[in-house]
Image 1 (cartoon, rainbow, N blue to C red):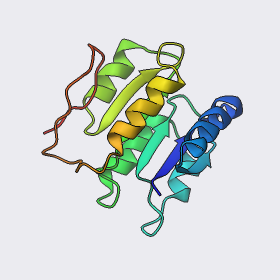
Image 2 (tube, rainbow, N blue to C red):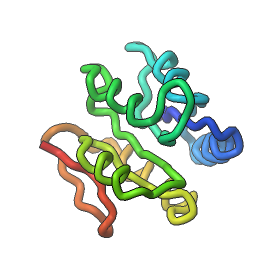
Image 3 (cartoon, rainbow, N blue to C red):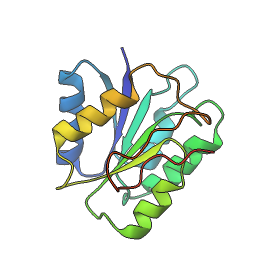
Image 4 (cartoon, rainbow, N blue to C red):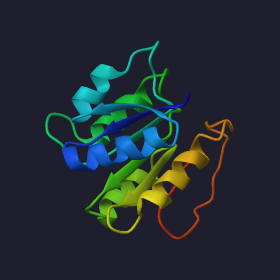
Length: 144
């Protein structure tokens, strides 16, 4: 069973996506912020995908992603940033991170998110040589 780490300080949003992913057959690990998420990741218990917000106390989403990408055990883990902000600078920052996708609350609904999660977890290899085109003009994967 594929495992998704859901990270958001908004309990209502976090619970919504925890339930969505669980009801679609995924194992889910909820985390209240980036630090909580980082502490829940171990070599024996790594997520297959991280679904995270940006603005959170203690450790924000970008710091969490930086930690993930700097750790060889989690460097190729796909990440979906889910933000209500949709700021251009956040999109640009996400677009520069390998295996990182940006989705916007209020624009990308649960069905869109579930489709992206399934696409990313379809057992195709992810890594430095994989390239996924943007489905629309929003920033997606940047690979090297």
